[in-house]
Length: 112
Length: 112
Image 1 (cartoon, each protein chain N blue to C red):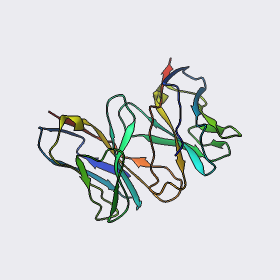
Image 2: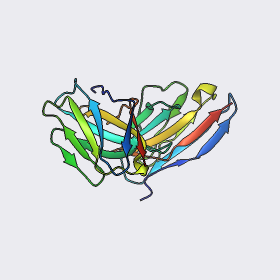
Image 3: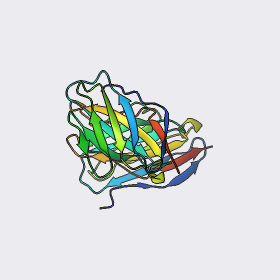
Image 4: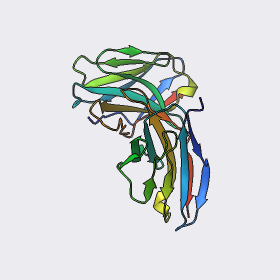
């Protein structure tokens, strides 16, 4: 199993550009998540999904969009990038019940 | 989900046990205690979780007080590779999205 994979690892965007952060998992997990982590801070939940076709907002959803057309993939879309979106983005997944969340390696995004 | 309180930083000598405390005084009966760690800028890594009883796995032990208002994560023989930020998280079974809420964590520095 590859677990949770994220692409790209690094990206620099200009203000106003758009991009999609890719996330995929091969564990057949229903639940998937996007977090962002600013320097020296804990992770904050952006969006999550409890299954294909179902998504919901987390704590900091403004400026982002998600979709979940398959169980495996959960892309995060940034429209009109702003410097405040400079952060490290982590994708995670988990199955049902009280088990662990599995995290991807992260995407480091800089908006200048 | 109940909030947690952790010391911002701790030091530990290599080879000694590292005892990381966590206060969760408002925890309710169906809420689990989870521990994750984040080494440098990698994705968080699951360590252990428990409900009422003490738990042990190959990485660590989790001691939960009888009233469940606090817990301690024990790394029995800390190594330099255990230097990381450790997050204590409380999550309830009624949490429909199986979401985790990260606080600031404890930055553990293992010293030679």
